[in-house]
Image 1 (cartoon, rainbow, N blue to C red):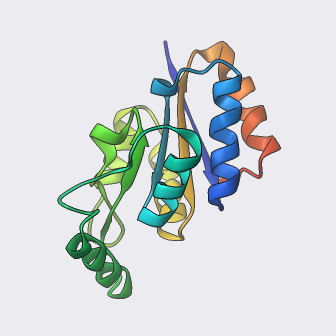
Image 2: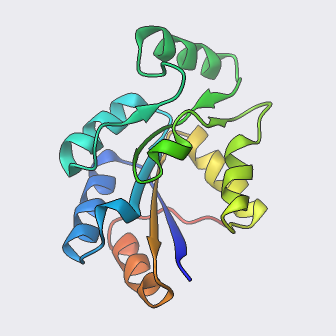
Length: 156
């Protein structure tokens, strides 16, 4: 049964390097996804990794969508995620933050413990980037090692 490994990264550079290292380790691109709430981060990562164009929900990449997300952050309301890779169809546009548990419910639905999901959401709200890798259980250590080599941020 496939396992989902999630790493939190602070910079687009670390994220891009991790994605490239995963590709070098023969992980299919369709098993790797990147999530952020910042379109500028996602555009840079997409440019560096060839994971595909970032997807946003409800026009999130339009000028109106970007302004809506900036306003939501200032007013401490929910913002929409931007995603690339295999999770883009399902996670793009998912809301994170005050007044919503969309993202948490999505992670819990794939087996992530609720408290971990809350911490991942908090990292996204702080401007960090998530890398999600679907792998076989015997590959989990390899993914974790790649994450660790490139400044993964831990969760408690």
